[in-house]
Image (cartoon, rainbow, N blue to C red; front, top):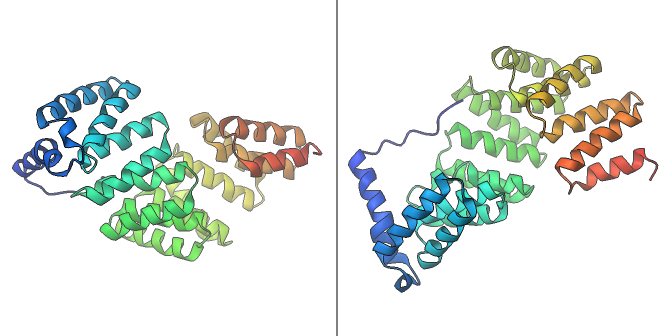
Length: 291
């Protein structure tokens, strides 16, 4: 997978930027900076970093929130705040922190793709789209940004725009599997099964354990009427990523089409176990049970 865009900054410049962020910026931007001076802030920051390294996320959060309250425009503290919220599963708070990071950071691209991913975790696709669009506009040739904006268009049902971006990304970085898998999904949804097969077959040969690739292969085989083969790929995906709900959803759909209501309900139960707030799946389950 491609590395994030190379940022060519001299080591001295990096040190100066870090010094500015930790020592100078707090004194310049802190609304309530009288609460903490620069030396106190540095000590708290060191302790918060230690707690984060030790995976004591709640302790790290309390310290980082204190820093953020004193210096709300300090992008170093905002980045750490977003990171901690991510580990805690507080995706709304993570997204809020990235929003402010984008506003105040001299390097806003560093929030990408986590910025859009936080909204995706919340299933807030319009906000995900806006976040990914901001990232894309910062660097239109960054293939991570291209991928996530294309994914946003895909989630919004704007398949032609998604296809255009996936193709642009593949042209820039042909071996990036996520772009090719995304393009496969678009071709499946548009009914271009031959094109989808040509792409995903090559991806599978190169990355046989890529779970998104296995899912796309399973969906394609189902669309081709080869349900038995599809289940082999989907079940392999479940083995590799047992919390990936899309595998169970597709398997449930196959079970329904085969008239196997018991298996379909069991798959839907698994989805609801992993993602309880899914009204569409709950509705399908009730329908199968005659509710």
